[in-house]
Amino acid sequence: MRFRYSTSDLLQNEFDSLPRVPIILRREGFTVEALGLVDSGATVNVMPYELGLRLGATWNDSKAII
Image (cartoon, rainbow, N blue to C red; front, side):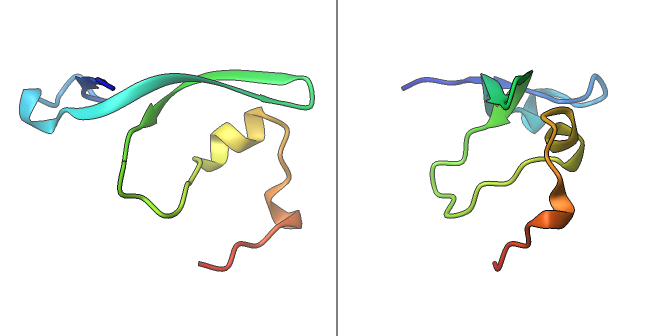
């Protein structure tokens, strides 16, 4: 697969580019479009707090052991 490299801030240059993939997340009637960072060596997935809130998640109900 090939992924487009881009920056997340207009002040960054091409050397700050990272592979990102557009994603659509759905949860209990909520839908959010976002850009995911491709990390083929990752063993853990993370989601920004604000994105979870937009999906209707309640973070206080779950604790992850990492």
